[in-house]
Image (cartoon, rainbow, N blue to C red; front, side, top):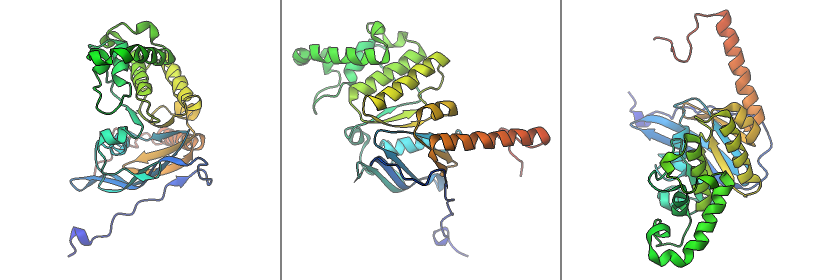
Length: 293
């Protein structure tokens, strides 16, 4: 009998490629054979993605596929079991999250994270990038910051104007609607001067009008702000409208990659086929009703 160590690794299926041409721009972010295991369970298995500079790349897939875990590894909050993460050609595996952030990486979490008892303007001031050793809250409370405060406040106002929150600047952050708090998160990202943005479901929970505003803002950040964006998104229409490339992640593995329009078209076609199959064979189990074994 062979031990588990003697067993060959499980085979990872090659992803379906919808475009034979490689991305033109040099990669800002690249992962190679990235794996993450917990108690022997593979959460991610040999995930390889490329995010070219100045593009918007989507990670799509069902809940539980490992998308947020991938962001945790890239941002340095968790360490992979194996594999490589390169930013600007340099290996970053092993760096702490603060060190990754200092390389120009910003993250918008799926759940809203704001300083509820600070004003909208103060939230952005706290996020402003400042020299090493300066307190984040110095922009608000430290008297030594007063000489620079006027300039900092003007920069913060500019970021609020960009996201359309300038009229809410004096309100407490906790008084904002859910959609407004997401926009405040974008303003804070701008204040951090991050160039690579990791956006976890930026349109989730938003009304249609707010979704259009967020999509327009994301496009503006890339087209006019020079940012590069990797986002997790369930709304396939948004992926088609916004993204250059897309990866399909399911059960911790990349199943397909290519131009966003091609990837989404294939996913929608597969979904339509499944719906037709269910109509013909209504006894087939759905995803919510797995087969019993």
